[in-house]
Image 1 (spheres, rainbow, N blue to C red):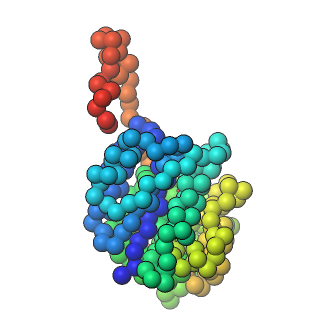
Image 2 (cartoon, rainbow, N blue to C red):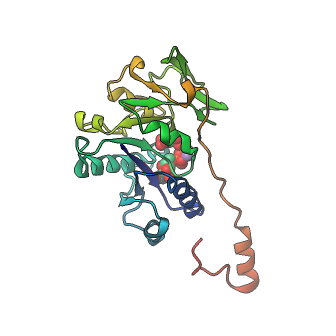
Image 3 (tube, protein in one colour):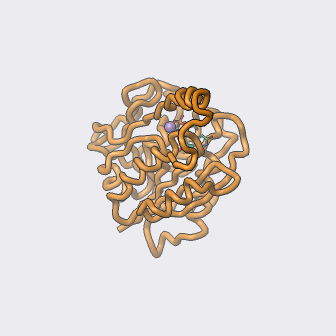
Length: 246
Ligand code: UGA
Ligand code: MN
């Protein structure tokens, strides 16, 4: 059975532990699954270190601080570090695998993992709540991808969200240079990456019932309101107990 390698960049923020908890408790349902978590930080944080050691999912913990401040660079060096780890530590001949870029804030139906495990080159599927649409998706005719339903820069060769495709591990060994580039023009990150796998439209493997089902959602957790902390501080001289990890 091919192993699914999920590459997840993550960064420190109020909801980080909640996001990682939700994600890990999806992944816990999956056999032959390995989670590569890359912190956007100059060193591994205590929160993520402790979290991973107790989460029950097979994992690798890495860290690298983003070199760029542009918002569009988020996650790039982290994902590339995950890819370097794969190349250094795995042998796709001995153990086949599939690589998926699973951002920490999305919502994933288990069914998509069952289906992506069979990816031969690159598989694709719809993603909910992207590009100002209820969903974006590949258009499929007679079992083949023939085009795209996308709203934002639909002229991109592969107008896909990060959550909408998986890649066979072998391709990362066939193309040693395959990675995300921080020189890619904003919004073209995924499209350029998939182009670099050298697949044609015809090669793409449509999942989720010929791309008629939404099994992944590009959700975004709202930052919680913590105004009460300041109010408590004023009244009591302290907020909630800082020794309690949230
Ligand atoms: C969208 C796409 O879904 C991302 O895959 C893409 O990386 C991103 O745009 C982009 O602009 O390049 P979006 O929801 O806007 O994603 O981005 P976030 O969810 O905020 O970040 C994507 C991933 O990078 C997350 O796993 C997040 O934890 C991580 N991240 C974000 C960092 O590691 N560092 C940051 O400073 C921000
Ligand atoms: Mn996101």
